[in-house]
Length: 592
Image (cartoon, rainbow, N blue to C red; front, side, top):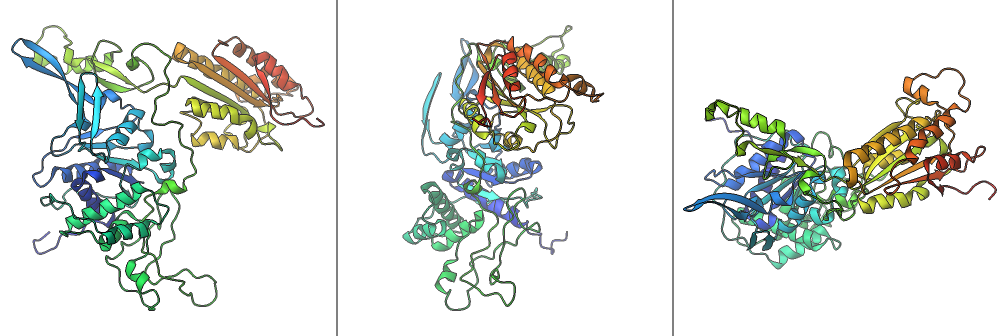
C-alpha cells in the first residue's frame, strides 16, 4: 500500500464496536458491554481490542480475567500473596483481580453469559456500574470503587435464560452477528477527557421519548450515560438530543428521528443526523428473528395492487434489538444468584465433576498427571539427579458444583393418544425447578427415534433445558421398548448413587406409561425382532423394574403416571408394584 493510498475504513460492525468500547473505557458506569451473536472465534480478538483501548495511548497492557462455569468466589474477591520479611516469609490477603484499583482497569471476559457460575453472576451484579463496593472476606475488609470493565457474549435466543438482574448491569449492548474480522491494527486512542459532558433537560426528555413510557430506570440511565460519553468524545460540553439519537443508533434501538417528527406533515423528511449503517446481507440477526428492515422513504405496502402509501414518518434503521429478552419465551432458573443448599460436609473443592486444574493451595484433591507434567518440565533446570516435585508444581482439580437432586423421567410416547400429560407432570417439574435438580430424560416410542427398538436418553442440567420441553411433545411412534427404558433408568440411578454417593440427597423416578410394552428386552439389545412378541415385552418390563425397588428408598422416590388406557388398564399398577412406586392419576378413566 503506497502512502498516497488511504487506509480502508473498518466494517460498520467493527466501527460500532470500537466506538462502544471507547465509551465504556471513558465512563466506569458503562463498564458492562454485552455482545449478542458474536462468533466464538472472534471472542479472543474482540477482547484483545477492548483491552488495547482500555490501555490508553501509552499501550499499557491490561490484564484479562476469564470467567466461566467454574469461577468461584475465592478466585474473584481476594488473593493470597507470599511476602518476604526480615524474620521469614508470610502470607498476606489482598484484593482480588476484580478489585484491583490500579490504572488501567482490568477486563473480565465472559465467553458465554448463560453458563457463568453463580459466583461470577453475583460478582457482576455487585460490581458493574457500582459507585462503591464493600467487601468482607476472611482477612480482608475494604470499601472500593470498582474500575474493572466487563465483556460478555450471549446468543439472542438465550437471553431469556439469563436473570434480568444480570442483564440490566450491561449498559452497552450490541448485536454483532455480521462481525467477521477484527482489525489487528487500530487507530490509537487520544488522551481521554477528564470531565464528562453535562446532561440537559432536552437530553433527558429525548431519552424518555426514544425508550417510551414502559422503559425501566436502568435502561434510561444506560442510554443517557452512553449519550454523555458520545458527547464527551466529540468534545461537546453538554449532552443534546442529537447525542441521545446517536447513542440509540449505536446500540440499535428503533426510534423516530426528532427532525422527522417535526416535519412529518411537510411531505419530505430531512436527512438524518448520521447516515444509518447499511443492513447486513443476511437481512437479520443470525439465530434470532429476521427483522423487516426499511430505509428512509421506503414504506411497507398495505395492499398488493397500487402504489404504496406512507402512513407516517419512518423510524430510523436499526441493527438488531439490544433487548432480546423482552420477547424471549424461555424460562429462567429459580433463584439464579443463590447457590443450592448443600447438605454435604467436607471441603467444597472436592465436590462435583472435574472441569480443569489449578495451582494447589493444599494437598487435597491433587491432579497427579498435571503435577507430574509440570515437574517434568523443570527437571533439567533444577539439576537434580532424581525426579523431584517442588511445591510450585502441585496442581489440584477444579470442579464444578454438583447438584444434590435428580429427576429421571421415563416417557412412553405411545400412551399419550388423546390426553396431555402436562398436568400430571407439572408437580414433578416444579419440584425439579425449585430444587434446581439435574434432569435425565428417557424416551420410548417416539416417532422420530433413531432406533424404534431401543430407548433414547439424554442428561440435562435442569428442566429448563430446551430438550426437556421438546421431549414432552414428541409425536408417538409404533414400537414401545418399555423394558429397555426401565433398564436404562435403573442404570442412570445406579450410576448417580455410585458417582455422588451420599451427596445425592434426593432423586425421583417418574414413569409415564400404559404398561403395554411390545418390544422384548432381547430385541432391544440385539436390534433385531424375531418371531411373535406376545406378552414378552410386558414381562421383561416387570423383570427390569425389580432392581429399582431394591435401591435406597430413603433417597429414591418412584411414581408411575397412569395413562388409563383400555384394555389392560391394570398394567401400570402391576408395574408400580414391581417398582415400589405410587400411582398418579394421569387422566380420568373411561366410564368413571
